[in-house]
Length: 293
Image (tube, rainbow, N blue to C red):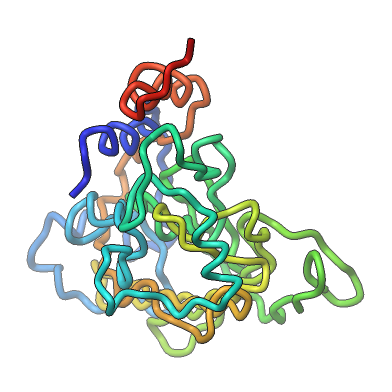
């Protein structure tokens, strides 16, 4: 169970709000289908996952406060991840505010709380709330509510970049690592887009989830966006990181999302250094027995 200090800490990045709205690109989604029960089971459009999506079980379902949805860090032996020795060592060096090994607020070292970019795949595992997906014939853009971040998934037939030391190789060119990596997607059937992503930041820059699970620059992430029908989407995410884990494992298993009205005005959530500092001074440090004097 989350204590009151943890709840306050989770709430801080979401203190400010403003407007950001995008319409769907496909004419089939211009109706407010979620408000019309007669259209609830309408067929999914072909090769189209565009729209504004929200966790089907409520906004709170995407917060994932105990770690990745399918494998929470809750002390259950069934949820123990298959760490390599380096993975376990890296995990133990992460001092999380939440999870089976949580520490007091003054002693955690999550890079998010310095307002560093959370990166990918953590963007799928942290405050996954209203998510806007836009697409053209060549690419899909995913716009996350948290931190106003976005990533591009290329669907134009290009190959996935090859991982090399310190970056990726695209043709004959070596490119830098990115917080949100390099993503390529292919339609495997009329309603399922499978996305592969590589080229993310190393383990000293990012965490996999809020409980401190590690992820490295060797990771390959597979996402399956399956549009069940017109109004429902399922997201499945698999982690394959030979540096941190002995075998691939599933972090999300058919996570359900529902289509929102195309006129939905998505709120803004971001990390504020001044709010983090204020929290530490007024709440985090006193709760941890730390005297700033």
